[in-house]
Amino acid sequence: MIRFILRRLGWSLLVLWFVATVTFFGSLRVGDPVVTLAGPHASARDRDYIRRFYHLDRPPVEQYARYMGNLVRGDLGRSFRYRQPVATLIAVRLPRTLLLGVMVIAFELFFGILAGTIAALRRGTRTESLVLGATFVGISTPTFLSGKLFLFIVAYQWGWFPIGGYGDTALSHVWHGILPAVTIGLLGTAWQARLVRGELVEVLQSDYVRTARAKGLSPAAVVVKHALRNALLPVLTSLGLSFGALFSGAIVTEAIFAWPGLGRLAFEAITGMDLPVMMGTVLLASTGILVGNLLTDLLYAALDPRIRRG
Image 1 (tube, rainbow, N blue to C red):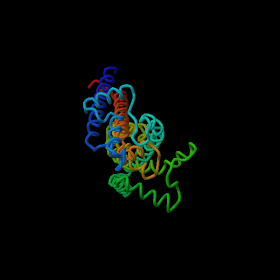
Image 2 (cartoon, helix red, strand yellow; image 1 turned 90 degrees about the vertical axis):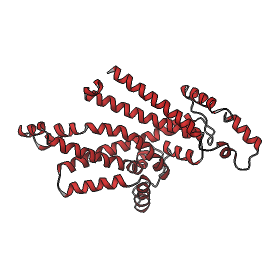
Image 3 (tube, helix red, strand yellow; image 1 turned 180 degrees about the vertical axis):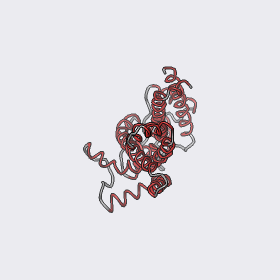
Image 4 (tube, one colour; image 1 turned 45 degrees about the horizontal axis):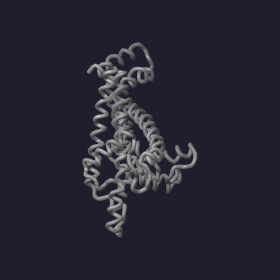
């Protein structure tokens, strides 16, 4: 098990280095940030000063070496827009996005497993068709569209939830985060429901489920204790893959609902050409995805010894 963990950690660090390298050299191709920083009416002297201050006048290789050295020390650079360390900006907004992420995962697991189980147990009925139709809508609807619809209809027209913001207390944070969490979680919930349905249909036809029924166990006990437990193993893998969709969905959703998290920070950095913040948020998102996949692999390996031996 230790060798398995070390191997996964090594691959994760290698991927993280690759992401940091690609992000850095990609940032050199998006344009000159000095123009954005100095403004259209700045003199050549002012632009040269800004370029020297942020070490943008140095060769790309030297900039890369400085950037990687700073990363090792935990220094993500200084924001062009806020004039603050990127690490400080991220530290303030990270808990808000983590709260949103926990709500999204809880929403996906509860409603995805519930809908998938209902569809599997009502196979061949209108209920199954209704669930599958709803999952098709959830998969095919873009996040920005569902967010706009929720904001206009549910929040503005009906007044059921706040239009946007974050609130002042812990309870209000959760209350303000319901619509953003549902918006982000629709896609994952639809995938979870389809995955659970497919796995559960297959498990319900297995020999050990027939044996459990022959022993006289109640239908609920057969589903919960035997069928559903084995059908949920692939859900772990899909949860690891959903971390990427979580951050990409947060960029749009947090901008729509004015949720002051990492997604909104990344959106403002993209629109404002704030390269240090862009690179920092991409690196943090990649780290989150890698950590999620690593935890998924470890949990899967603990449940299935064949994986860690492979």
